[in-house]
Amino acid sequence: MPTTRDIHFFSGPRLKLSGRLYLPDPGCDLGAGAVFCHGFGGVKEGTPVGLCSLLAEAGYTMLSFDYRGFGASEGERALLLPQEQVDDAVAALEYLATQVRGVDPTRIGLYGTSFGAGIAALAAVRSSRPRALVASVGVMSGSDWMRNVHRWYEFRAIQRRALAAIAHKAATGEIELCERLDIMSPEPESLVRYAEKTPISMETVWHLMHHEPIDHAHRLAMPVFLFGADDDTVVPCDQTRRFFDRVTTEKQIEVFPTGNHWVVYDEALPRVAEVTAAWFARHMGISA
Image (cartoon, rainbow, N blue to C red; front, side, top):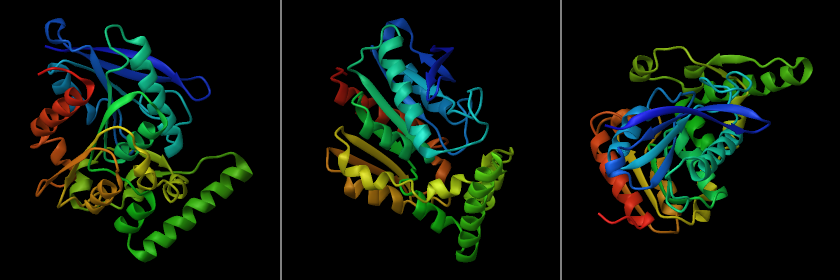
């Protein structure tokens, strides 16, 4: 069975980030690895566990981590700035490629899910490390996501709140916090899935309006595999399809007809793990 080991690495202005390695059994170790980028306000003890465990069983060394300001990582608490999360993902790729014994630095993959899918895509544009990218149920346009999940009057109101929060921080240095679901505009299943309160900075909304991984899809140089869910009520599947259309390198897409946003963590998890492992192997030159 795979084992785990908690580690740390640094990103940004010498911030210590908390990470967790999933290590394959020596007998099936492929000498390859991948970084897992999780979703909006999440932590490494959440959605990464299932897929990281299965990919470690398949022979991959997996690294999941807490973005700065969340979980056990250092940084301003709950301040979620997409560009900083991209920086953290790039730092995680470098750590995996250079500091983890037994991992071939030319055999590195990248996986992102939900909000982390867009973060992973941007990290893959900036870093030459990933040989392959897999992204599931992704937020590929922050501005479209905000427009999709809020009614028009709510959308205008939350934009005003975000700008007011930036003005308040400029005047006082204080960061205004809200609940994660205030930004995600929950539907009934989200209220169940995200029952634990998670504070996030209100100004994040302003940054989401300028967070557009889809505009960089054509810059991806590595093969890309995308998963979507047709009945996704958290992130419309149209985001996955439009991103796929703009990718110019080798690409594939698989859309689950049912299961909502969480299908990739629940009933479709074995399929996601199987496809991801095969996609990585194919593009890392690993024999079956």
